[in-house]
Length: 179
Image (tube, rainbow, N blue to C red; front, side, top):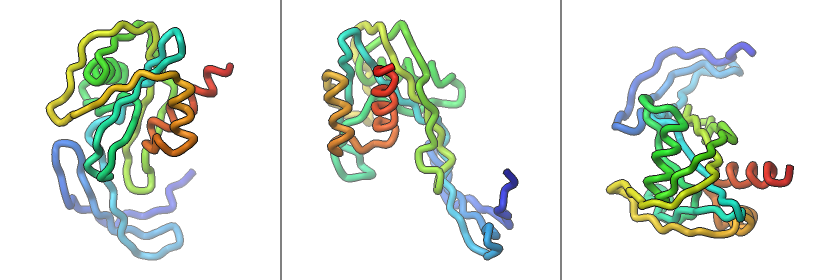
């Protein structure tokens, strides 16, 4: 489909090692002049849903500064441009849970908030797991929870898990497990 937007100009408003923010002067699809803010992430969003042979999974709990609240999520992190999404997923799973997996399946691609950002995320299911040692980043104070997958699914349904990538991964995995 043809792009109905016209970009008149754009300027960088903010830049750090993780994001860049731009302000765009635009003509909207209804032919009105306006501004549009765009946040570009410098890494891919990477999520991993580890699942053992008994259909238990692992969640990571942490205080999210941006939300000013504690959240439970699947293991996740950023995927640098010089790594494949699978390499990033393998690294993140090891860092946050200590787990190594012999079986990896990409289960979804997600745009996290496409009205304001171009961020793309990839989620993998990790199986055939071996427990090792965690390697937390220096910004992480994580709690790890090993629980039945069904309980993680219930946490999505009752609003205890609100992270978009975690919700999408858990809901999609629930469907895949029923096939």
